[in-house]
Image (cartoon, rainbow, N blue to C red; front, side, top):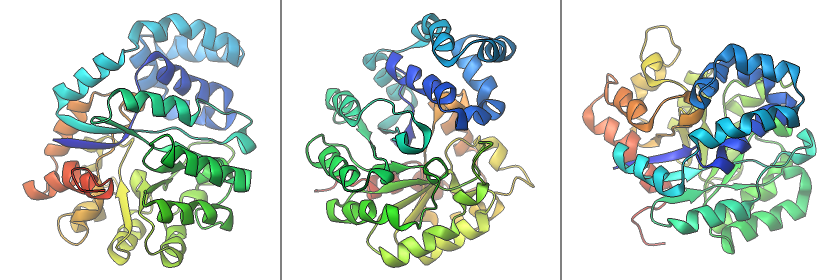
Length: 323
């Protein structure tokens, strides 16, 4: 059974949240150049109509135009679980972010995701969202999200917080992750904004973090591309650094010249136990089943693919283990 360590929520609220991010958070408008076709297709509209409406309407008007289209494709929680069942996904970890200080927009609260996962505690998990610029209040909110709400980790995007992963403003949150024994997911790759340098996502900044916090379970989101060799070296060096390749089509990764060659070269052996499956399937415009089938086609040993799809996720989230 598969463990999805970064999963979109396809309920009405989850889809609306995704659309609100790329419309209200102007930093993220650049993502529509890359994923707009997938998002538009998922919502049942053409890319041309999608972009025309986005250019003609303000954010609130655009979301009003999108509401009936979101409603048409949104799933109930029961339907979502049925889709996970059909694809053989045992657990899915939901994600969201708090970037209010730097983007002036805050989405759904941690309490919302706590309520979602409590409906299906054996199937759904969720990261907490915390803004590091909120200081001690942010740390308190994170502790509440884990201890009181039952969330299972922390998700951060340095390029949206406008600081690098090794910035001391993150350190109180990292220390709390260690104390609470939960992982932190950190965006580690190119970003497609027009306002944040891609340097924010370089894997090298995790080297310092792992040295300072050797017991912090770090998930490098999106696999560090285009610095894949650098990412692989850190996963090999540090026992506490893992990586996923979310939001990258698996069939593309396996093509010569994609830049992912080091992951396949070392992922069969030295970092076999450090790589996680993460779907972000709505952004990809693909089903879990299609993504998983493309991973099974990877030029890797069968045992390696089982590690990537299931065993490693179980380990980092202590699934099936005593707490």
